[in-house]
Every structure is written in structure tokens, then in C-alpha cells.
Figure 1 (tube, rainbow, N blue to C red):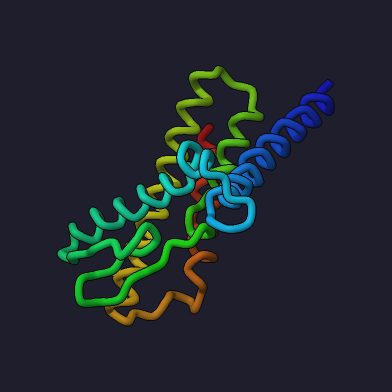
Figure 2: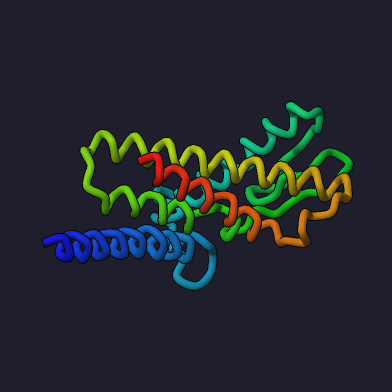
Length: 172
């Protein structure tokens, strides 16, 4: 009986993760001009653009707290006035981490309200960590800081977020 619960959990987790992760890749593919571009999907279902915009605006607010004036050069870039900027590519959005987090709680046995609460809290924490990362990268580029331990910032971000995810799972 215990084995059947585990197998069902794995099927639900892997299915939800693949739907979220690869579904996001499909949306991205349909919203980028060229190839299989869909004006309908680009106009009504482009949640990666909304996520990117929220990350850019969150970064803008956070770095403003530390006295930096910024501007958005376009929908992908934020720069410090009279300084350098960063480009927020699709790989910077954190949709893989968000997919993992949401799939974990979708597959778990808990009440719907508890699942929704944990999905929202965890997603907000992942988003906030990403805003902090983008802000630090933006400031570091302009101040010419070295990256700790010579780690690439995506790798460092993933390590920190997965540590937070596993801590939140442990609390759950």
C-alpha cells in the first residue's frame, strides 16, 4: 500500500513538473516572434513576460532603496543610470525552480487550502530571492565586485533556492 502511494506521488510530481516546466517552454516558444509565433498566446497567455516584468520592477524598487537610480531599456533589460545593466533572459526567470516547488505541493497529500498557501508562500520566497540576485548582479556589475567563490550567479541562485526549498519542505 505504501509503495502505491509513493508511485502515485511520483507520477503526480513528475507529471505536474513536466506540464509546468515544458508548458512554460512551449509558451515561450509561441510568444517569441519567428518560428511558431502565436499572436493569441503572446497577447493573452504570456505569463513569462509578466514574471520578467515583476522581477525587473522588484529589482528597480530594491536597488532604489540603496540609492541607485535605474531605468528599463526595454522589456528585458534594467540599467543603472549612467552605468551598466543586466539582461533578464528566460533562463533568469526561475520557472524551473517554481515548477519544482508547485509540482511538489500538487503531488503531496494535504488539504487544498494548505497546498495553495504553501505554493503561494514558496513562490513568493523564490521570487524574492531572484529579485535579490538580480539586484546584486546589477550592483556588482556597476561596482565591479567579484562573484563569491567564482560561482556563476545562476549556479549560486539555484543552490540558495534549493536550500530554501528543502528547508520549507522540511517545515511542511
